[in-house]
Image (tube, rainbow, N blue to C red):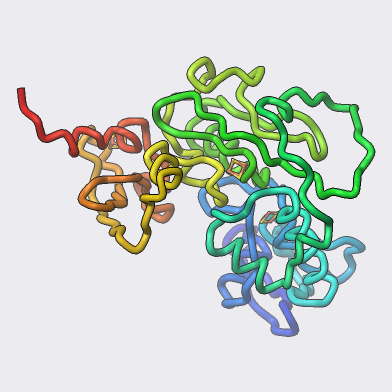
Length: 305
Ligand code: SF4
Ligand code: SF4
Ligand code: FES
């Protein structure tokens, strides 16, 4: 019953956790580290990545800590050889097929901590041509070759505000959740295809301007790998001018409407380069609308008529 305290044992320590909380909540409250990738406090768990798996006494399989609710008397082990091996293998499969060079610090830290060696899967196969992965249909299996299958493909660059670089996508579903039930309720993107051919797509793979997208950019705000990126950042990285050592972050309030969303303005060389909102903001929970997210250019235009 909600409000009741449950007693569970994690890594040999008996702990109390409120009914309704997850194994991950209990671990975090006890400062026991469990890595996550597809989980975010502001989104419903989708159980897509399985990085957070732990051993549960009585369970044949490992269980995902991010979504499995705590139960009275549960006994959990978070750091056994089986758990570490499973996490390592998942990271290696991701790293062998996806470009993780711009992944967030948590994911990069995990690769190191679990000793992931994606190169074990062989050299990377040739990159996909533009649109090649989008044409794959369920049921068409390809014989594996000596090379590691890859999601490498050209960046999708079809609008003024942001680019989609699905060579970096780990299919964590966070963008789908943020575009759908958990924030924007726009449903412009979803997962198409199956197995290794699964990919994030607009409806019928139409370009973003022809899709239902309203350019809130909430997908960018939750993406852990840099697969979704402000055009400003993409162009600066391409031109070699993106320099985090020169950047500062200023917290302020969006000036456009009375909601008063919290904004974090990332500034380089006296220009706003990206805008985000803190996930722990009680007003936004990290989500913004198109004006707050992208409407910052006026600040930089000083000319008056
Ligand atoms: S684009 Fe980013 S947020 Fe969306 S599924 Fe891929 S990695 Fe996750
Ligand atoms: S981000 Fe959008 S909803 Fe929030 S204060 Fe700005 S204009 Fe209003
Ligand atoms: S973080 Fe739990 S399944 Fe992805």
